[in-house]
Length: 77
Image (cartoon, rainbow, N blue to C red):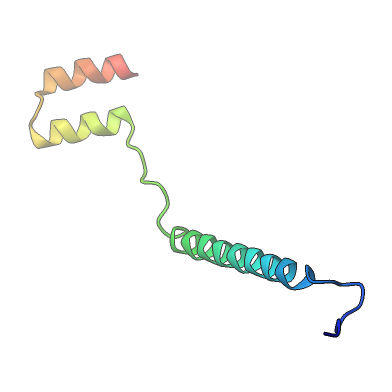
């Protein structure tokens, strides 16, 4: 039996394989994170409505009358 790489010993192969798999898994994780971030750039968080906008919509739908609208609007402003 001849040692084909003097000085490297038997541990070089397993260590190389561990490093290879760690780098491969890291690359896959980074690619997945990049793809997910690319897909979510166009769809940002939904715009939150201000309380006054919600109040105006409730008045427009007829959920509250003009007196209630004016009272609540004064409270907000």
